[in-house]
Image 1 (cartoon, rainbow, N blue to C red):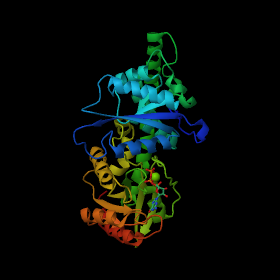
Image 2 (cartoon, rainbow, N blue to C red):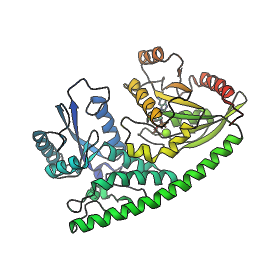
Image 3 (cartoon, rainbow, N blue to C red):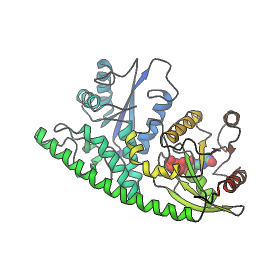
Image 4 (cartoon, helix red, strand yellow):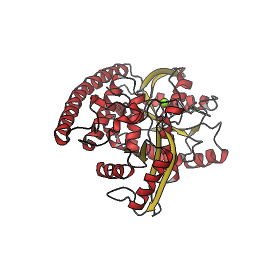
Length: 388
Ligand SMILES: Nc1nc2c(ncn2[C@@H]2O[C@H](COP(=O)(O)OP(=O)(O)OP(=O)(O)O)[C@@H](O)[C@H]2O)c(=O)[nH]1
Ligand SMILES: [Mg+2]
């Protein structure tokens, strides 16, 4: 069962929030926008930590050519990190980027508290937000894939942070007699994964049947995609009167919601899906492949962009990258510039110049939603394909 896991998920009481120190390597070559260690990436890591119920008390950023293969940051910086952990009374360290199991272990030995990476943080948030059986199964599979190479037969208990519980009931690094214990843990996790995979197949089959029923009705399918927090759920609600939870946190939505709606007499379905994020952990892309197929099999991708995000262009690039990766890169796309009620005018102008067909809207105030309906109905006409 996916549940609270490594970190502080679900802790909303400030006094009890586990404290975290962030650590990052800023590569010296002109790094691409939003690469690990850049200000945009660190700002996002802070938001992820906050969403996960952690209080960030300090940050240690090192400029160097590339991460140290053994300890991520160099040994001098690792000592500075240990001091920051001590001074801040931190319970864990979160690295911006992906750590190898070895880097995490070595750095942990220096700083004396658990060291996790961006992937673990995102997995933790997913575990907290998954509601459907399928979502839970997918998250837990991703967690197991992450944990297996990181199990330690001895040492500190990672799972003690925030009183967390491990997927499958096995504890990371619970004190015990080394190798034997480790083997038992590995076997248990592998067995659990096998069972989960069987469940996942069943659940995917069920969803496939629902999808076929929709197809028989020849209703074109529109998939709402976009960066996390762009306003996808808010837009679905605005367009269909649905009541999907919208929240100013990352990954509020994990499970696809399908709603039917009619514009100008043309019926179609709208599916709200999981938001994308830079460097989406590959374990998650794998685990969520069947959910993401909802996007692959749609007739139109409604790509919602948060026009008020300073990094909107980078977010568009990220979303296009993920769409490519899941095989949805060639689908027709309608770009929606959302949150124009708060976006600076010149940002909206710049986005429109780059994407002349994009429709500016505010899901909050309803501005531009009429135009969006017109654009959608044009697609609905085109997309009614009797051969499917
Ligand atoms: N000002 C403003 N805020 C908006 C608008 N649309 C959505 N929001 C807010 O942005 C936040 C995120 O909205 P959601 O609809 O939950 O975003 P999402 O894309 O579904 O996010 P995830 O499911 O977490 O990936 C919420 O706090 C919304 O109230 C808008 O047009 N204007
Ligand atoms: Mg949502």
